[in-house]
Amino acid sequence: MSEALLTATGVTKSYGATPALRGVDVTVAAGEIVAITGPSGCGKSTLLHCLAGILRADQGSIVYRDQDINLWSEASRSRLRRTEFGVLFQFGQLVPELTAVENVALPLLLAGSGRREAGEAALGWLDRFGVADLAEQRPGAMSGGQQQRCAAARALVTEPRVIFADEPTGALDQLNGEQMMTAMVRAVREQDSSLVLVTHEASIAAYADREIVLRDGAADPSGIGIPG
Image 1 (cartoon, rainbow, N blue to C red):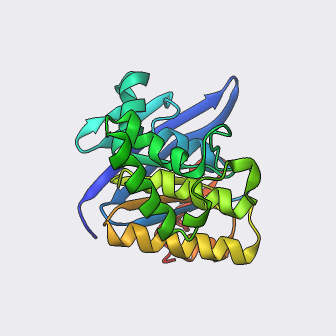
Image 2: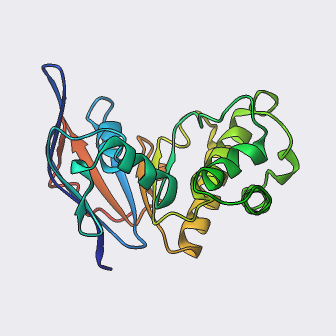
């Protein structure tokens, strides 16, 4: 396995009196695809959101490139998600007022790229996901599968070191889901990024190099390291 890029140790998270994570340990290597699986309500999405810095863990450390990002301010974690982390949610969460190419270019613009440069890069990523013909369409004129491909392009446009995908095919049919995952895995492999993927579908987990199974907010030792 390559050198560890992201390491979480003893991560806990509760919502009020309800524990969601109970001391979870996770390591993601550079260039690795890891699937986090388990039954509904086991803490999969909470863990991914903590790893991505969207949520702050109650206890434990989340070390990325030798720095504990769980100690960082919200502004610093947000900046990390604009540059070295990419996030893809189940329903895409595209900005409805923006066209596809504007949505995909947005992370580059926020990071300081020029409008022309950002637009050209966005068009290139839309093309890689097979939706370049929708560049000037707004999300309301797209199908769910088309929106999700645009959202995947947006998550990858900055060529992040780590991509976090929370049930990225959950709203898609099987064919669209497989096409999405094939395009995403190809892009991740080409740029040597890591992908942390939350899914409840065995067919989607099979795209991963390794599977971590959560049960009741803790990693199941019998499930860690299952090849995808």
